[in-house]
Length: 393
Ligand SMILES: NC(=O)c1ccc[n+]([C@@H]2O[C@H](COP(=O)([O-])OP(=O)(O)OC[C@H]3O[C@@H](n4cnc5c(N)ncnc54)[C@H](O)[C@@H]3O)[C@@H](O)[C@H]2O)c1
Ligand SMILES: [Zn+2]
Ligand SMILES: [Zn+2]
Image (cartoon, rainbow, N blue to C red; front, side):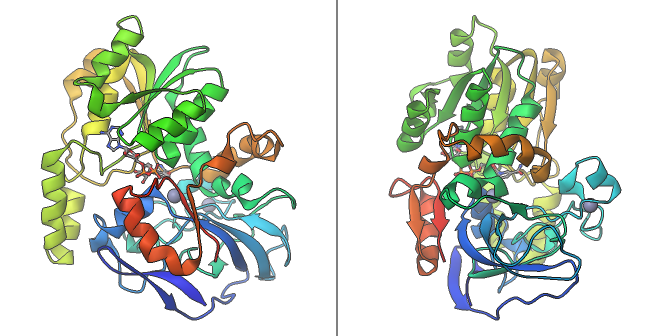
C-alpha cells in the first residue's frame, strides 16, 4: 500500500510499504477513506524530529471501512464504517474505567514515562504506524473504533478522531460559567471548533490569530475575532471588551510553535541542529517551547478564571509566571484529549442534518495520497489558504 512516511525534518514522502495485517486477537484492519493532517503532525514535521525514526508512518485522524477483525473484536464487523480515535485505549483498565483514555494503563509507555500509545506519534508514544495510508492496523479494536451511520459525507464524522473531542474537552476544562466568556488563542482547526463549541453552548467566544483566512472562517461562524498583528497588547484589548476584567476562561489552541516567541524559536532551531540523542534530552529537560500564546492566556483570563490548554507543549523547565497565576487565582487544566470520553455527547451534533458545528466547511483541501508531501509544506507555511488537509487515499 501507499503511506505517508517520515524520512527526516521537513521530509515526508509517499512510499510503498507492506499492507498491515491482524497481529493480535484484538486488532482490526481498516481501509482508510479519509485521513486528516493535524497541527500535531506539524510538530513532528520539524521541531519534534529527534523523537522520530526514519520510516515512521504518520497520521492519527483516520476513518474508513473495516476490512478484517481479530476474534476478540465483536462490536464492529467487516464492511462497517468507523472512525478511529487518535489515542489507543483498552476500555477496561483502571484509567479507562475513569474515562481517562489518554492515560490507558494497557498501552501506557512506561519506559518513556508517557501516556497511552497514539497512532503515528513518535517512539515516545508507542511508535504505532499511523493512518495517513491506504490501510491501517488498529490495536485494541475491541474498544476504540466508533461505528458511524452510512449516508452523510466523511467530513461529518472524521473529526471525531481528534479535532472535535479535543475541542470539546478544551471547552469542558475551561469551566466557562453560564453565559460567560472565553478567549480562544489560535484559530487552526482546534481553535475553530473550540470557539464554535463554546458559542454553541452559549458562551461569548473571542478568537485570536494572525492568519487572515482563519480569522475570516471564525467570523463566518459568528465568532468575534482579533488579529494579533493589529493589537500591541491583545490581552488589554480583550479586557477593554469585557468590562476591564478579562474573559472568564482562556483556551490555548496554539501550543509549542507559537508566533512571537523569538527565544523559544531559537532554542527549537538549535535543538534541530544537534544529534538526536542530545536534542531529545534538551527538548525534554530544557525550556524549548514558544510560550507567547500561553502567556497571553494567563494575561487575558480574569482573576479567579480558568486556563485550558489543548496546544501541545514539550519542554521541562519552561518559565511559568507563578506570581501572576497565584495572585490571579487561576485554575489550569490541560492534556491530551480522552477522545471516547466525549464522542457520545458530540455524536448527535455531527449526525444532525443542519450540521450545527459546520464540520463540512473545515477542510480547506481534499487531496490524494500522492499530494501529501506538498500538503505538509503548504500546511506548515500556512500557504494557499491551508486550514485543514483531508487525504482521500
Ligand atoms: N490536546 C490534544 O489532545 C490535542 C489534539 C490535537 C491537537 N492538539 C494541539 O493543538 C494545537 C493546535 O492544533 P491545530 O491543528 O489547530 O494547529 P494549527 O497549527 O493549524 O493552528 C495553530 C494556530 O495558532 C495560530 N497562532 C500562532 N501563534 C499564535 C499566537 N501567539 N496567538 C494566537 N494564535 C497564534 C496560528 O496562526 C495557527 O492558526 C497544536 O499544538 C496541536 O498539537 C492537541
Ligand atoms: Zn490531531
Ligand atoms: Zn485502558
